[in-house]
Image (cartoon, one colour):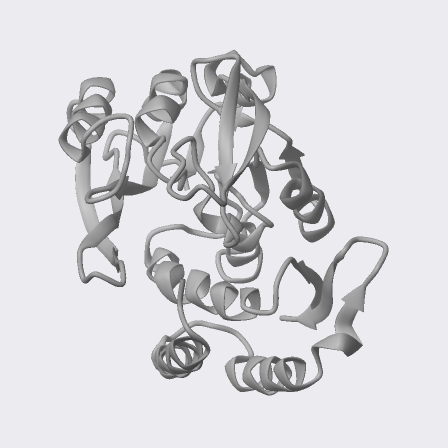
Amino acid sequence: MYSLLEKIYLSFVIDVHWLRTPRIPDRWKYLLQKYFFLLFPYLYWNKEHNAYKLKLLNRIVYIPTIEHITFLQGTYIDHAYLKQYIKPNAVVIDVGAHAGEFALVCTTLLNAQEIYSFEPLKKIYELLRLNTPYAAYHAAVGTAEHQTLYIPKNTVASSIFQTSPEDTPEESHSISLDGMPQITRLPHIDLLKIDVEGMEYDVLMASKTAIKKSSYICIEVSMHRPSTKSALDTLALIKECVPNIQIVHIGTIFPFKTGRQVAVDILLHNPAINVL
C-alpha cells in the first residue's frame, strides 16, 4: 500500500501525463472537477449505490473510492494510443471491465458502437451497470464454471491469487466467450481487451473463436506477479489461434513499489481482418 504522501505525489505525476496526453477530451475541466472532489468528497457520496457520484466527461460516473478518480485518468493515459488504431463505430469486448473505466474510454475517445463488458465482482459490477449503457455481464471469463477471487482494498487488483491475509474471498460465476450466443453471433470484433490480473491465459482458452475474429487484441500480460501461465505461454496461445498476428504496440509497463515490472500492455493486430 502507498502512504498518503506517495499517493499525492503519484496523483501529480498522473496529472502531468494527463496534460501531455493528446486526444483526451476536456482535460483541464477534468482536473478542476478532480481537485474540487478531493477537497469535498462528502458532497459526492451516494448512499443508494454506496459510491461517489460525479459528473465527468459530460456524463454521470460512479466510482468506488476517492483514489479512483486518479485511476480513471490513468486508464485514459494508458489507452489514448488506441485512437490511431481503432476507428469509430467499433465493436469492443472488455474482459475485466471493473467499474467501466475502459468502456468510458471506448465511448468518449474511440466512439465505439457496441461494448460487451465482463466483471466478476458483485459490488463493482453494480457500478459497471450504472456507468455503461451497453451490455454488462456479472461473470468472470474462463474455462472453469466457478472461480474464487480475492479482493484487496484496491479492488482493481482482485484476482484468483491471494496476496495478503486481509484479502476478502468472493465466489464468482465463470463463462466462456465462445459459448455465449451474444458473442458468437458477432461477425467480427474490432477490439478484444483483456485485463484480468494474472488470469489472461484462462480467458484466452475460453475465447479461441473470439480471438480468431478479433482485429485487435489489447492484453495486459503478467510478468513478475502470480499468474496461471507465463507471458510466453500466453502470447504463444494467441499465436496458435492466429499464426500471422503481429505485435503493433507495447503500451504501459506497470511497475510495483519494489521497482519490478509486474505486467505490460500489448496490442496485437490480425492483418487478415480489416473491417472498419
